[in-house]
Every structure is written in structure tokens, then in C-alpha cells.
Image (spheres, rainbow, N blue to C red):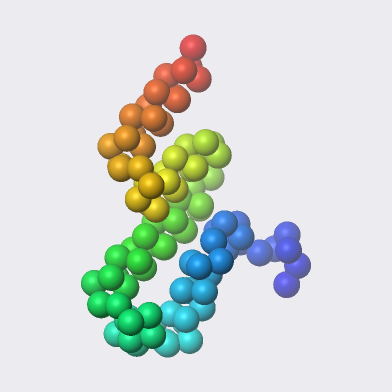
Length: 98
């Protein structure tokens, strides 16, 4: 497959997320099997998958500017809380409107 035909959401994945996705597919989508593989609980795997889904959804949002996507990604990765992300994005939008 040519690089320009690879979906942007795949290119945006960090190596750790790509490996998780690969293992998920190889285990036929079984969260129980993934939990065994990573030696963590089922809820931990579910949370990880939910965060990966959010990352993919954010990457697919073409209407967002790169800065907004970056801030949303920080929130998904729990590097900042969701409320802080909303405040930053709102402030950014207001500053851009000036």
C-alpha cells in the first residue's frame, strides 16, 4: 500500500497503540485474551480500547484545526483533564475570532 493511501488515523497512532491494535486483531477482538496477554484486568483493557477509539475519532475529525486536535489528544491520554481541554479550546476559538 502506498503511503499516501494509508488512512490518517492509522498514521496518527503511536507505536504502543498500533501494537495494541495489532494484538487486538490477532486475538480476534477478545478483550479477555488481551487482558491475559497484557496481564491486566478486563476493565483496564476496556478503558484502553475506549481511549484508542477516541483517538481514532479525533483523528477523523477533519473540521478541527491541528491545535484543537492536539488538545483533545492530550485529554484522551489523560495528560490534561477534559474540563481544562474545553477551556483551552474555547479560549483559542475566541482569540481566533478577534
